Image 1 (cartoon, rainbow, N blue to C red):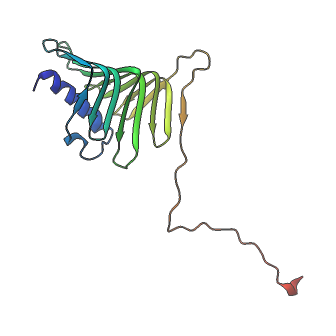
Image 2 (image 1 turned 180 degrees about the horizontal axis):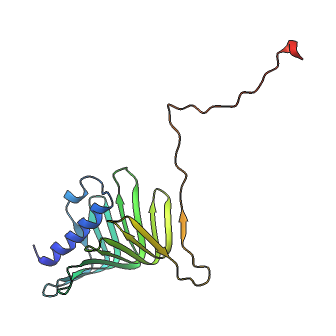
Image 3 (image 1 turned 120 degrees about the horizontal axis):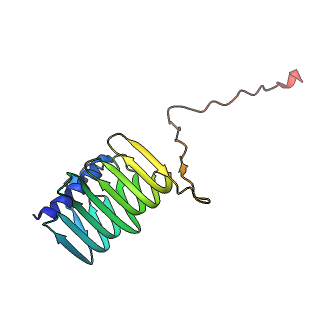
Length: 184
């Protein structure tokens, strides 16, 4: 297997594993569909030109261009999906689907940081964070969302209410005094 393909597979597997991938996703084949690809093995880089579609189990990535690379000066391996927007989705262990979209989705394997830039959006079960830029450190579980600070541009977070319904717990209704006919 070519070194550039190993790099891409390694980046995708690291990304998916860290967001609690559905069991079995990482054992599935990795399929990349593109209009064309260019591999620069000497410089450890592969570029897919699109539209590009990546599928591995329940993982789906769609982009106009997908790059996977590392540099000789740094041990850092990077995957970069570019699109209008580029999208990432994956079914999680709990059955929900996590999605991310942005004009640029960058994953740095060494720092385990996912950076979404340009109309960035993260969504899981209706809970959303949107902004111009979202940076998520997977190892430390730290998220930073930022806006451009211009005009109406803001970071927006939407949190869905939790479902507190439990079949074993019956809602208690307030007692309403009932007057008997002889008490009137």
